[in-house]
Image 1 (cartoon, rainbow over the protein chains, first blue to last red):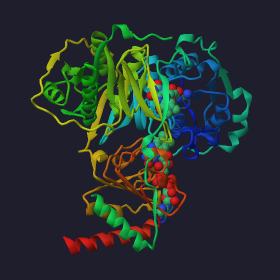
Image 2: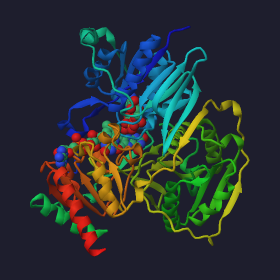
Image 3: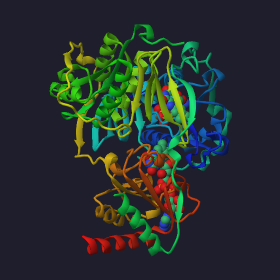
Image 4: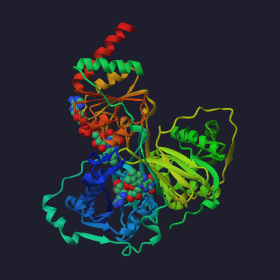
Length: 265
Length: 339
Ligand SMILES: Cc1cc2nc3c(=O)[nH]c(=O)nc-3n(C[C@H](O)[C@H](O)[C@H](O)COP(=O)(O)OP(=O)(O)OC[C@H]3O[C@@H](n4cnc5c(N)ncnc54)[C@H](O)[C@@H]3O)c2cc1C
Ligand SMILES: Cc1cc2nc3c(=O)[nH]c(=O)nc-3n(C[C@H](O)[C@H](O)[C@H](O)COP(=O)(O)OP(=O)(O)OC[C@H]3O[C@@H](n4cnc5c(N)ncnc54)[C@H](O)[C@@H]3O)c2cc1C
């Protein structure tokens, strides 16, 4: 049996609770927020690692983003991944999901493909959830999205996943290779293995590929490869709440809330 | 630039809505999209058309027309009985390329999002996710999608000038449901499709779907967060006093105190209640997007600096474990007196 090859797509995002909006300008103060690995991508990595625990094989992390992603992503190496590839080039900047999925697909092809390509269900910033199906389309493989559990039948080369849908779940089966997207909090990501930390920090764990390395079609990447454009920004009107503070003892507060409820319902 | 399979010059001035159906019922979000599409089509003199795929689903077409569609493109096939990404992408793609609508909208449901994500790549076009408003600029027929940037404080307008169809997804509950008019006339056109069973790689092994609670239109929503420390009983009691429902942030759902179908927010439900009462919730934007449409927001939090107070009409600084029992006492006392 050939070894199991897995690739996990991971994105680095600003910590949601540290993002502040400048209400004067209506812009995000991104700089005020520290970076973290997109939370469901940790669940995706955990799902892949537990398969690796069982079947062995090779597990690589791939990410498209600027150089500052690298130190954040090394945590994934310390958790158990074998290698990290960062797709980084000024020409990748401004990518919408079409250009992002094209670029990731090129990177995965250059890695030699994989039996399982993992993603998180969605990112905590862009939050489109469009990368997993888009990636599957570029790679021309089936997909299992929104999974809470996955099992393999390695002899028959099929993957069987439990997918969350409205009001329930379904169990789907597809042949390998396939793209998988994993629900947030569907498992408990393991801690970094401190014995791996030095190893994880070594230069040879990382490859950085630019557009040329990927033989990427310049028409398909970054801003140029993105059909969508932001034509304007506006401040959301919806923040016109009263923000009136009520005061008193718990029972006085309760009386005031009760009045509000009875008036409004 | 990547070019889409058809250009703006080749488009037809029509809005398409994917009429998602599950077990013989049209999804509400599809009807909501028809309602919004009707308004825009009337303003522009365009047509509004529904795309209905499945097996034995023709019976749903008249309801689509009653809800605003001028025309329903219907494709029925044994292989469309269950949603599989391969079959649905294949058929939708075929019909889109034949009819070349300018605009194509889908509900941001699990299947709608998957289908949209595949189709956009296959057609080499753009896709705007989770739009909070959709408009069409009359001169050039450009779809202007409003999406809320995180923090909710910023709205971005996104458009695509050179690619067709102009695709967008919208979450359930963003637009109002239409008032169906059974006397509306429209046509249902059954389409010949070409579907090779060999392309379908997904096998549905098992499927279990319950009645499915729908929080999106509940008038009184009592939401609890981590600050409830798992005590959702008291919230249920409170909700029942006004025939409301309990919702939650993600942590209590993850911890198993409440069912997943009650999660409110970015990866949960977008609600539009008359009153949202938020108990022990910090006010992360992932949660707040789910209650933004509430007419009135009351928040109880022991931390006067909690961000939730930025999004509330009435801010109650207090301990939920003290205030809520008092509230129930006051309310049930009054009910006894006045009922
Ligand atoms: C507020 C906001 C709204 C946006 N709206 C749109 C829109 O409507 N349409 C559009 O086309 N673009 C949109 N974008 C741009 C979009 O975020 C980027 O294209 C992004 O590169 C990928 O999309 P995502 O973050 O939504 O990924 P998602 O599809 O939500 O992410 C799912 C998974 O894909 C993987 N993944 C995603 N990005 C990467 C990456 N760079 N490297 C490795 N793995 C990755 C991760 O595993 C992740 O968990 C938006 C961006 C922002 C900030
Ligand atoms: C991709 C992604 C998607 C997400 N989707 C969602 C989503 O759909 N919905 C969602 O809710 N979250 C979502 N989250 C999580 C979200 O970012 C927040 O972590 C979450 O909303 C916080 O929940 P909370 O307010 O209950 O908990 P906390 O942030 O821990 O807040 C608890 C609050 O309770 C208060 N409190 C504590 N004790 C008491 C007391 N005795 N009385 C009164 N107040 C008290 C505290 O002051 C605090 O403000 C998502 C995150 C990611 C990364």
